[in-house]
Image 1 (cartoon, rainbow, N blue to C red):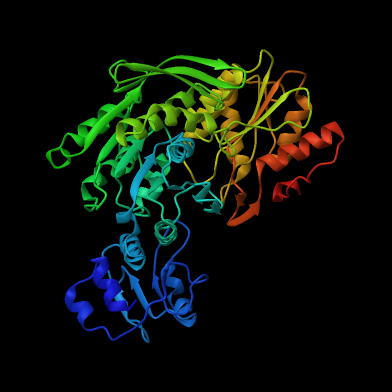
Image 2 (image 1 turned 90 degrees about the horizontal axis):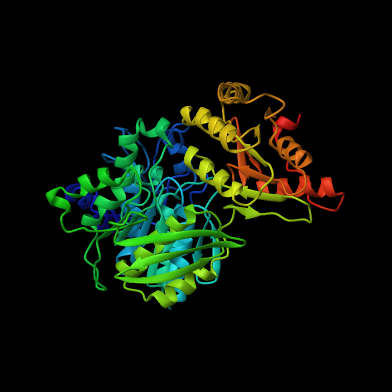
Amino acid sequence: MFLSELLSRSKQFKEETISNIQKIEITGISHDSRELLPGNLFVALTGDSFDGYRYIQDAIDNGAVAVVGERKLNIQGVPYFKVNHSRLSLAYLSAAYNDFPSTKLTVIGVTGTDGKTTTVNLIHNILISCGVRAGMISTVNAIIGNEQIDTGFHVTTPESPKIQGLLKKMVDRGLTHVVIEATSHGLEQFRVAACNFDISVVTNITHEHLDYHGDYNKYVDAKAALLIGLVETNEKVQGNYRIAILNRDDQSYDQLIEKLSEEKYRNIEIISYGMNRSSDVIGKNIHNIKNGLEFTIELDGKEYEILTSLIGEYNAQNILAAVTATTKGLGMKMKCVKNGIAKLSGVPGRMESIDLGQKFSAIVDFAHTPNALKVALETSRNRTDKRIIAVFGSAGLRDREKRRMMAATSIELSDISILTAEDPRTENLDEILSEMADEARQHGGIENSTFYRISDRGSAIRKAVELAKEDDLVIICGKGHEQSMCFGETEYPWDDRIALRSALSSLLKIAGPEMPYLPTQE
């Protein structure tokens, strides 16, 4: 594709700017000078810890044939185009380069504080069970047919060039539907711009990322972008839905309804789910069973019994969201919807059981917010009559208030809390743990009795399994499926599941993996 055509199709540049461009062939879009290939267009971005403008010359040296950015610059050797918003331009340039793949797909987006990944997996499983050729992009991985693609170290929506490339691959392989997990960062940073969503699902909006968004109202605004963006979705040959799926039980419901009541959003259909009897899709009679959950869904005057191997009453909400999107949204029949739910055995790092033959339960969960930790511990309480031993931390350079909230929650709901590292980044880990320990004491915790401070996460996990007695439950929270932990500005390979297997194998004196290295071991 020639540069002039790319800029014209993206509709982010003035015609007079485009008309003066010589014929330059573009081989791709890049925002990372280290990964840039010859012939790429380089888009300079900035973030909390990086400045892409510092690497423009590196990008040119590596073969960039044009540069886009927000700053007024005088660049020699290649054309430079100033735009109002680099990230938004990156998204539309990436979409244009890939021939706007989302316009050829029915796109379901899922956002919320907790439950996004599970809901995305549920919807994807349901679509496949109902015979739909569907793909999926989550913060864990992307699925295109039988191919699984890693989407990165940490949990956030991939940057727009990767998303648009994945969507193009789905179109090329004949897929018709895709489910996309959209984080608040991904929405606010325009990573999912130009994705042409048809159905937008909100799981819940609780306390998280207030360090980034400022306050709860702004956090809701960021999530609401997935809903109000439905009005901007291009007309599609396969038809348009423009449906917002909302959780009527959640504190965000009234606020989101108020936003969608504005005249310009009147063509968005709103469908609700929840335990609230006023919901369009109602859940009731929830029971924890030995290997999962069973409950009833009331839909269009009929009742359906749901059986799932997902554990925890909170997963009933995720299932309701998925059922609402696929039945009320896409018109799927409940028979195949139920089959899709039943076939999902679990999601990586979400209440994932690790069993090496020990006499107590051991679970890894992603719970890294106050609400997620609360429901994970409540679920754990339903699975044992003995003690709960919880291991968790709180990330550095993130919302400081949640550190205290999580410590207080664990003191209330678990028997032993072990406070440890969780991506301290450039913050002082001892100070993070000190804040958490102070809150634990204020809520009745006794250090070295009902709670411990162990800065090395591997040692904290070992301590938990050593303390565990028969029929206790050990739960490791905060990292889930993630594959690294950040100290300073360095990502160290880390997987809680490997660490737990290492600790258990040492306890049982059987062969097992080595404990992954972290600098806190020294």
